[in-house]
Length: 405
Ligand code: ADP
Ligand code: ASP
Ligand code: MG
Figure 1 (cartoon, protein in one colour):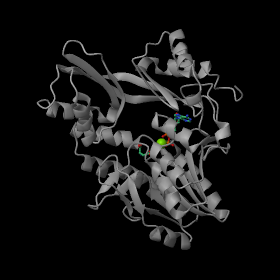
Figure 2 (cartoon, helix red, strand yellow; figure 1 turned 120 degrees about the vertical axis):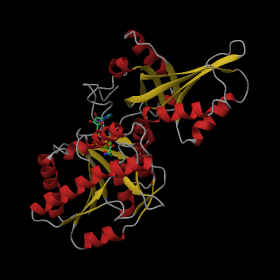
Figure 3 (spheres, helix red, strand yellow; figure 1 turned 180 degrees about the vertical axis):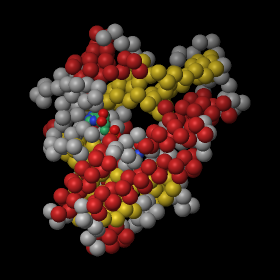
Figure 4 (tube, helix red, strand yellow; figure 1 turned 90 degrees about the horizontal axis):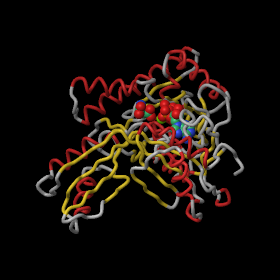
């Protein structure tokens, strides 16, 4: 079998863990498999590099930021190759440039466009274990890009798709996908399997166990995907095409603490304002999430919306720079918020799900700041301090800890 195995930052955090992972990889290789490994930067390396940059320039160039961040993954792959060599097994590390992972040009959030599999297959033919840097790509200028936080999952799935791998295993510090982040909800239940669509929704709403684009790609190319633990042999969670019969009312709860709310106070109460505002942001490649517009009073109204916290400064800058095109009284922003969401493909046909969710929050005396709904999810914005309590209350209310509901 050709297997792509991805190990996240905590799984390779120190020498002991690198050696432990090396052993697991070699075990699979000795069973006769062709093994391609994708690695993240060790432990908190990426966060540390970001902090280092900020010490020097609070507003660093995105290109230089990617040059810096990509070094984390490069350290991991070289160290892993050394650990495998120490076990007497041939291995070679490669970065994005060496295996030609072509990406779009936008630094910090690039998308993989293509991968040249030739070098990888050559190395596999030479009986090497091939260890590839996650998280990075090369754009049309030949420069290093990164794929967004958590992007190594996407590197792994993209490689699995391109190499036509039999299996893509995402090894992490939990032993599968749960009904909610098990660090937040102790009673969360591990799922045996989850559909691509539900996983995509959970990941997009903040369940960072998988990078959302990795799930998108897995669905598109029908990649055999499993999430499991790098520390135990517990059976993981299979992510696959879902069957309609299994549709659950609510499948899981997601918590996203990396959101910020922006409020534009006192814009003109006339047609075209929302269009101008959101097209400006779209041009700057800033995704806007929940949007709320107040009822107009006199000739003024307010618009609030949420963005990813990493986009907050850029969003504020866009509005500041366009102040003459777009008159407003003032702009407020708030980092102290979190988004809590429920996901379930059976939700669309069932009345009362929203009411049940809001009741759970009311019982905990948690104030809802914003609401957004779609066919398969409901999200609320709450104070960051209330987020974990909200997730637990909602999880309890929908009895997600038990399989039969
Ligand atoms: P890695 O470094 O291996 O990529 P991440 O920290 O990116 O690991 O993702 C794993 C983490 O995802 C877990 O430690 C857990 O806290 C979090 N998580 C969030 N939602 C879920 C969920 N529904 N099921 C499992 N883990 C989740
Ligand atoms: N090292 C990168 C990050 O911390 C990519 C990843 O871990 O997936 O976001
Ligand atoms: Mg991750």
